Amino acid sequence: QGGLGNSALARHDTKAPIDIDAARIEVRDRDNQAIFSGNVVVRQGNMTLQAGQLRVFYQRAQGDDLAILRIDAEGGVTLVSPSERARGSYGVYDVEDRQLTMIGNVVLTRGDSVLRGQRLGIDLETGRSTLDGASSGGATGSSGTRVTGRFVVPERRANP
Amino acid sequence: MRANAAPPGGSWDRTVAILKLALPAGAAAVLAACLIWPLTSQQEFSFILSKDRVAEAQERLRMDRAVYRGEDSKGQPFTIRAASAVQKTSDTPIVELRAISAELRTADGPARADADVGRYDLERERIDVVGPVKLRSAAGYALDTSDVSLDLATRKVTGSGKVDGKMPLGAFTAGRLTADVNGRSVVLDKGASLRIVQR
Image (tube, rainbow over all chains, first blue to last red; front, side):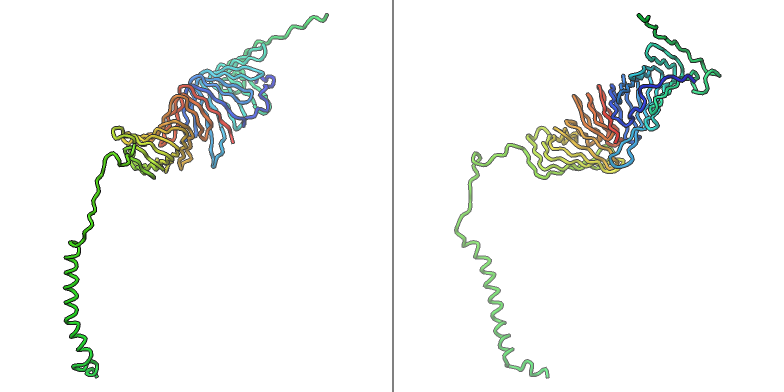
């Protein structure tokens, strides 16, 4: 389990307004779903998610309330936050449980260090991030590929 | 006892005798009056309709509180009510409507569209709304937008050029809108953006 530093997305307000741009938006009120396609850009607070296609699951219990349950992103997903940039094949933003997960050839860039793995999880409450090698998200090392990483240690400035 | 009720030669016999003469005479008099009376009237009532002095209406047809009824392709009925309906010329089946409310039956109950101004194409059963329109359905489907056309036959709302508006999921702008009231779906394309505010 490649434990990393915390993401700046800690205490991310998952109830904040979500702005989504896309070439095409299809809202299926009957299934409580909305499908976005064509260079989709999602912005919420200081988090930006880009993807080829996006599917938003929402809930309208009664009256005028609205809750977004989950956002599935696919077709090349990029997450940008003040502290990192992550790319992967799929992304799942579980709005209700405040969990962000990226799956499939994940490349996480933080500062100068670049980490690769199969599955990146960011807890939007604590900001705790984990990068797993195993594509199924199980214990690392056993069957999955290894997590590889290149750490860059900032040079020590020669003191005058 | 019955005898003294009407003794012979008493007052009752005299009244009957008088009536026997008076009534037929009265009837004859009335009949004569009916026949002669119309012939005696003198004053002549006639007028000349002059074409140029008559007040000419600009429109071909003007109706207040107009109601149009029809059916969509699946036979579901719709009703369009308008405070006023004006058809300019007879060669184009377009009626200018004011204060419009259209009611249509959908798979999940009635839906209703309200708009201030619109042009109703009688043949194509389509309202081209000018300005804002509010669409609500019993199943909670809602769409507020403007300058779109509502096709009553196919239950589709279409709008192009810059279209904006709001629905339960959020406020939107798009290059084109196609909403299917029956299927309760909205497609925004040619570049679209949606602002979702959870509440």
